[in-house]
Image (cartoon, rainbow, N blue to C red; front, side, top):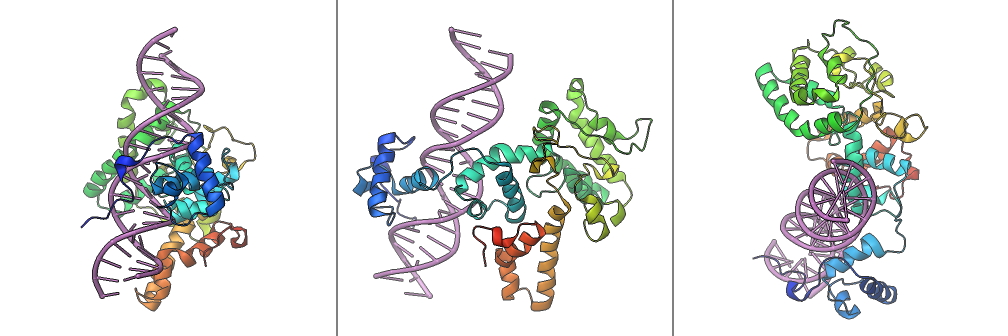
Length: 325
DNA sequence: AATCTAGACAACCGCCGGCAG
DNA sequence: GCTGCCGGCGGTTGTCTAGAT
């Protein structure tokens, strides 16, 4: 048995709100508050669904909302929190006064996701693309790895192609290990527009090459931020594991060198440790308390984790608007 | 000047959890 | 404990606009 719809769709207006409707809704809420959204449109004289009214109010009309552009620090906060919470937009928005989950979500989807992709960072895992490819290569036997890498390439293809064909890339090789040009990653990075047609082949080739590399030790896994490697990794992003020492420069974006948060690499050592430690913490607690311990459950639900991650992210918990305890 | 395209943002949809009866 | 309602949430779609062709 399905749920009763929240309103009769036939008698309900949809689409963009007019200033008159906004005015009616604002006036009604100012007088009566926001109890029972179902009754609000009826009482306010609006031919709208209660849900639509609630959305309009929370996303647009609320007096405490900010409507301007996101600042650098807001973007930085979103990226950091997203790496911890994923697409929990309401949680992220709760830390940004005046911003709604819809704002944050839209901003992420239209700007930040591309920004990160353009920087060679997977916006889902917040790890360099190279990290993901290398993980595939080092954890699976070659036949499976090749197939999985191809699948992964498919996932990232649009982002990578967009990056290669639309954005200027400013990768700088710090250590070119092979002056004869045998470093396929180097040639990949030195991509020129007229090579567009074989871009995909180059990416595939780069992946194959990555998978042929000998198994990595912690010393040549730049993203492995455990212990000693963490410090060296912070501040720079190694774009491909096979070319440790490549320094990523977020040059395609306007803020390079201007001292803004984006002029620093987003993927700091803490980026990696946050996720790694989350897993380690969970494992440890599960060992000590059993999988169903309350603490383990809380960690899974993200409550205690939040404060832990704030430390990892250099976000003082007292600075948070809504610390979740 | 007309058309196309991509980006930005507003709005909708369906699912889920909490809660009261 | 069960059921139905409500509000919240995240994903997706629609619409508008500015810039490119």
